Amino acid sequence: MPAQRTRKPVIPKSKSVIQETKLALIYGRVSSKKQVVAGDGLNSQLTACLNYAQCRGYEVCGTFTDDLTGSASRRPGLDALLEVMRSDRTKRYRIVFDHINRFSRDMYLYGDLRRMIDEMGGTLESPHMVYGNDSTSRLVENMSVAVSDYQRKHNMEQTNVRMRSRLENGYAVFCAPVGYRYGKASGHAGKVLLRDEPVASVVIEALEGFANLTFGNAADVHRFLEAHPLFPKSRKGKVPHQRAGDILRNPAYAGLVGSECWGIPFRMGHHEPLISVATHQRIQDRLNGKERLPSRKNLSDDFPLRTFVMCDDCGEPLTACWSKGTHARHPYYLCPRKPCASYGKSIRRDVIEGEFEALLRTAEPDPRLFAMATAMFKELWARRAANGQARKKALKDELARVERQIEDTVQRIVEISVPAALRALEEKIGRLEKEKLLIAEKMATATMPQGAFDQRLRTALSFLASPWKLWTSGRIEDRRAVLKLTFADRLRYKRGEGFRTANLSLPFKVLADFLSGEKVMAHQSE
Figure 1 (cartoon, rainbow, N blue to C red):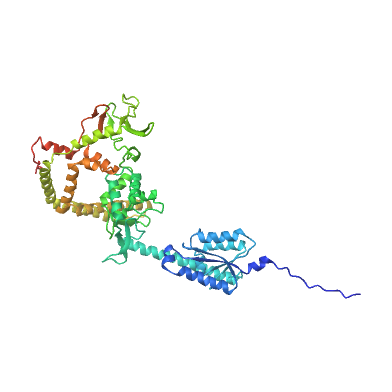
Figure 2 (spheres, rainbow, N blue to C red):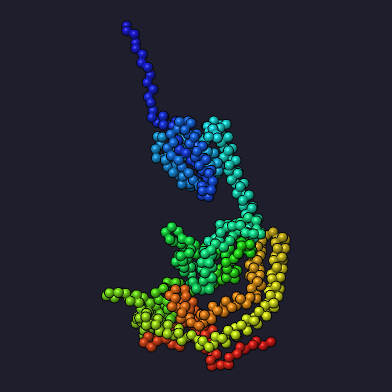
């Protein structure tokens, strides 16, 4: 019987097994974009991981990075890494990172990522730690994650404590608002908010324009900021719509610092304010609905007199439109009220606006009156300056009264333990603190320096001399200011006849009366 031939067992070569020991994905992370530019931590992580993979003969199939906190559940780099693993489940990747806290610093998030990678056949590796599935390795791994989670939360708590303390001392600690930047200032430890010109001047113009009704609503402010060449914009040349609202509501522009979330009442900070507290309060009153103006859509650049001029037949404000002709479009004003005799009867824009400019020229006072007006204004200013000390004393007494109320309220808080009552008293203290700031600001401006008066006088007299010049600037904001400052009421217009007698504002009335009356200022009775 022939000897039986024995065959050597053939071990099939599995391509997937070979790949499992050699494919690697490298991941690196820093906590912020600033660390990517300012430091070399990210490059150091990637270099250590790459050296580790090369020493073990791994084929690096991709490198992924993030510049977000380790507690973030969604990270672009990490999401891209997981997508590579999902795209081909036959491949077994080794995820290489420098340290476990670079992968995640949140216990719950780390557990979810660990299970997800295990389900896709991946493994975790690090140059500084050995990962395994035995009980001892998993204990060390879990303890490392717990320590990283503790360090993250502890650092956050310490940062919050330092920020709260600095905020209570009157220093801004949050992101610098547009128009400000953080920098060193003499007499202050650490960085404080500094004016960032020329953007700060643009922000001042926007804030004061909204407070003084130059801008009808936040949309008007947004259009102004987007059209201004000095205001920062996105790469597409746009300003986010939310930016205008953020600027209008931010108390930092009035020099105030505080936090409602932390229960720290707002107080005057150490940075230079761009507007007064009173101006900020007027802005908040308008935003909260206490003052309303027509929407900008009825006051377009094409028709500046729209809604300001009324139909003389029915008293309805005139609307306006563009009419399409054979070869061009033509602008018209017209009455929108159907029962009116002038309903739908158009008035050419050049006709009504030409007559308005002629009317505006008639409001210009006689130049001979300005020397007299200047002398009378100076006399009035001097009298107000003389009474400044009396006003300051009255405000000082008012400030003392508010401070006593604050002390009494604080004493009541100590004695009361009912949560609802405590909240009510805390809100009262917040209101009193705001009132205190307004009184302090009024005390600071109770008397005006002579130089500021001269500057204001020149500006006022320049406008009084010729409001028509401001109107011809063409800017819708200037034209709306002319309408509000020159006329006390809306104008009435009769189709085919023109404007009715205009009711001028008080300054123009007074200057007009000088020619017919006694040219002296009446003194207040003692």
